[in-house]
Each structure stands twice: as structure tokens, then as C-alpha cells.
Length: 470
Ligand code: BG6
Image (cartoon, rainbow, N blue to C red):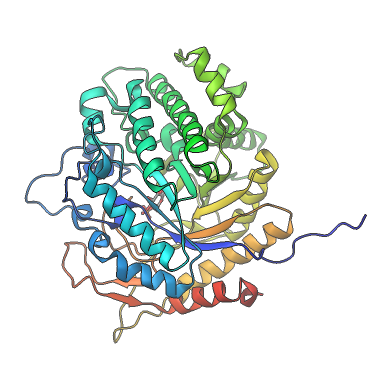
């Protein structure tokens, strides 16, 4: 038997882009409630700034880039780019403004009907994140958010409604955006606000358990209602290396990585990995779980693994680490360049990560967030963003190498193909787009859309199915 390998992007490769509802739509109208992301007053990484937005004070997400009213114009541009797939989220609080409402909000449902119809008109498949940090705020206030088991049934009801409504339009789903950020930023993923003197690890893992059950129930429902759909999980998997060959640094780095992989370990393999029991014991964690929960988690595992990858960092033995939206933070890597927002650019790390995940899980992968956030200059109405093209070119070549390594990759959705509000900074200055939006940090601007140089470049990549990269 002759063995061959895939040496090109596959014919049906899903090229596209990704945004989230809360960072783009704006449109706090038509019965929309408040979601978690909209209650961050300084950016997602600042738990201390969590609260209801002040009336009359400009909140960047209230306007977003006005995708709520301009999506037809934007989707037309995505069509021009040649997108095969477009990832966005449904904002849970548009459908169930409080999360525990008896009836869904029809106007919210209609909005997504129109958005999905528009995408399909251009032959673009929607890839829908069910919650991108968009748990309704009311569930935090009234129920303590995901600490409470009741959240499982609120989420299940929401899934049932959207699966039934969009079953003919959406065939690719993701449950929770970056659920594994629960370990380092549980407030923005799960609405967990710490109480005084509590065992924080206990709170995090208990809430995560509830989310694992909710994920399994969503998969069960999806299989019943849309049997031809695929439903994945979504993780933050920017990577981390030891900063030298000190075995202590190497082992600690493995341990840090395992904390991130713990989440896909449960959701893809279908059981709690044995390494977690020691950690729980040592930190006095007692996670309540029912036998039926474990049965569900075992039976309903995700079909594919979607993840974000922006950069790598390095870990020094004995040092703590913490994270922001792009991954864990450590010591600088002298071999890599750094973006103006401090994230180190590592295309080989992308290939490394794709191989790592394929080796571990053996299910299809899709990087659904990758890109360069930069300050763009508009000169004579034009944006020459060669730095973005270079970032993307290197990462796509690395992805192609991973395909050649034998990794099964369904597609690639670039993060923020149109400028949106940054999650970490809560302003528009950190731009990822191929399409510029005329808006400043104070909310001034015409919102006019302009194609950057990278627009034409990515368009050509898609048109040639990656062949032009060489
Ligand atoms: C991911 C989030 O963590 O990072 C996105 O899923 C976010 O919502 C992205 O926008 C990039 O982070 P930032 O801070 O540059 O917007």
C-alpha cells in the first residue's frame, strides 16, 4: 500500500473570519438584556470593574461597530472576501434578556434569522458560538451565575430554542467561548465573582462542572434537533514554553498547559482526567457531581475542537503566571518579535499547537481566533497594513505545514476580519480587521467601512485556496 500525505489545503477547507456578538453588534435595543461582557467597564481582564453600565455614559459595546444595523453591508464584504464560513455568537441576552424568562424575545430571534439568511445568500456557512461571555447579567445577580446548578437548565432551554429556530440554517455550533479561561478569568467566562475568604479553586471547578454538564446537554439536544450538525467546544490555547531547560521549568510548564487542557480533556474524552484529583485534594476542593452528570459527559462529547491561538509565552521556574485575553503571561522570548500590544508573534508555535492537539485528541481542529491587533494609520483614506499581512502569511504557512504533518484541520477563521471592540482593552484602538471602521475610542466617527490592503491579500488567499502562499 502506498502512503500519501495531504500536501495542500483540502478542497473543502473552510476559510473565513470570526467575531462575537457583544464586540460588534451594539444595538442595545429591541428587548436585549445585559450580558456579562457588557458589564465590564474597563475590559474583560479587570474583574474589579464589573457592574451595570452607567446610564448616559458611553460604553463601547453599546454601539459596537453597529453591526446590528449594518450587517448587510458587512456580510456583503465578507462575500467579496470569499468567506466559506463566518463565526459569530448569538447574544444569549438578546434571546432571553434575563436568562430565566418564560418566553424568548421574538425580536432577538428575528435578528439572527436575518443575519443567517444574509450569510447563506453569499454561500457563507454560519459557525455559531452559543455564548461568547454573554451569560445574562441577571443570572449573576439572582443565582450567582454558574456556581448554581440551575444555570444548566436555563442554558438548555436557550439551546433548545435556538436549535429549533435555526436548525435549517446553522450546521456548525460551538458551546462556550474559551471555557478553559475559567481557571484564570472565571468572572468573564462564568460570571464568578469571588466572595470574601472563599476557596476560589472550589468555586471555579464547581462552576466548570456545571458548564460541562450544560455542554453535554447541548450536544444531546443538537443531535436530536439537528442530526446533520456538528457541535464543537472552544478553548483558549495560545501556548507556553519553559524559558530554559531547567527540568523544574519544564515540568511546571507541562502542569500549566495541563490546566488549560483539562477542559478539552473532559469535554472531548468524556471523563475527568486522573491528574485533577490530586490538585483538588491538595486544595481542599469537593466538587458536587451526580452519577447522571458523569454519564452525560461520557456519552455526549464534542465533535471537533475550536480554539484561539494568538501567541506563545515562556515560563520561568518557580514564577507565577497569569493571563489576559491572549493566553498566559510569562517571561519574554528572545527569539520572537513582539506586537505593539505586547503579544509575541510565533507562527511555529501555531504549528506546534496544532500538532499537540491532534496528537492528544484525534478529532478535527479549527483555529477560530488568530490575528494581529495593531494601531492602523489611515493615510489619504488608505490603510497599508503590511504587518498584518505578514503575521497572517506566516501563520497560514505554519498551518499548511501542520496539514502536511497529518493534522486534520477543518478550516480557519481569522479573528476580527472587520475592526471590532477589543475585549481586553474595551476600545477600538487595537484593530484586527481587513475592513477598517471609522470610529475612535470615545465613540466618534462615521462608522464608514474601508477595505485595507490586507483585504485584497486575504481575498486572494481564499481564491487560490492557499496556493498563492507557497
Ligand atoms: C479572545 C476572545 O480571548 O481574544 C475575544 O475570545 C477577544 O473575544 C480576543 O477579542 C482578542 O483579545 P483582545 O483583547 O485583543 O480583543
